[in-house]
Length: 341
Ligand code: ADP
Ligand code: TRP
Image (tube, rainbow, N blue to C red; front, side, top):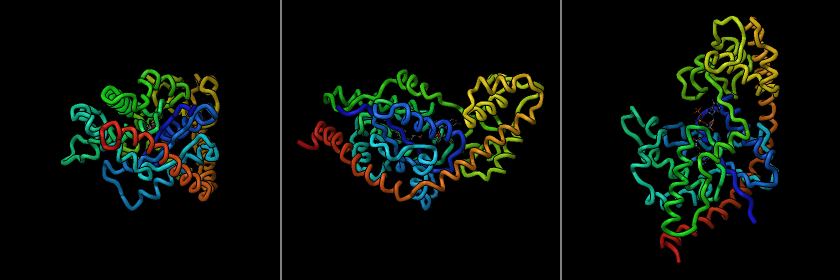
């Protein structure tokens, strides 16, 4: 019997930051290790999703490949036989299934999607691509019968929609799609990898995000380590005069503790114990800055060391294989709607 599928995608339309690394790259690397041999892992670059909002198209091709390099530098084992690494647009079934699913998805549902409302609001014109984004995402998931789709909070609504579309389609045509697990099971599964929410260094009430107004609160994976050091040293903390971990009242310090713990591999409880009650914020920040600098240097060395040929070979092998898998599901859907006999 085939193995249950864990599937996730990370868009390649900007520089990735420490939040992406700790919240998206590392969790999938951990899942791969944790479930070695038990699950099939589909990790892909949703390149067709990348220009649902405007981008620099001259960089897209290279950025898609670079995203995959980042996963490898973060520790993803590309030799693992159960892991497929591919680009969405190299598997035409994604686009084909989207067109079919469009006719089983309602305008009302798509209009209610938070991402559409947020990204579309205030724009003089909004593309059909942005509106249809969740249907393409549903095709990404359903083509492989993925059960678990680890994504950030902003994307869970889309996974739920994929499940709703699959249920609707199955009700009409029989058992065509495997359903992704419901929200509760997805959350339980994702939490087993301890997902972190890293905050902006300047405004710790917000998450670290590439859509923030200023770069000062963001550590980019490509930052010069000394620039990153300055960002940490000038991070917003608090005026209590005593270090304590509490995201409600001391979000700045707590965020730095999370970062230190994650990057140094020290359990959070040990970090808390070491600094709790101290008044030297400067000393603490220096330790966090050192951890960030060491991480960036090490990560960039790993990135340089990625074997591009090995990476390209894996991608082209995976793309061959997943095309076959995806086409099998597509054929079932085509038959169900009467396009094929
Ligand atoms: P951004 O907010 O920078 O645009 P995306 O929304 O494209 O990031 O998120 C890409 C992935 O990175 C998602 O899986 C998301 O959950 C994760 N992620 C983004 N920002 C953070 C953060 N600050 N902390 C943890 N994970 C994050
Ligand atoms: N929409 C996701 C994001 O913006 C990326 C994505 C596209 C995805 N298709 C997917 C994630 C399928 C998981 C499964 O982060």
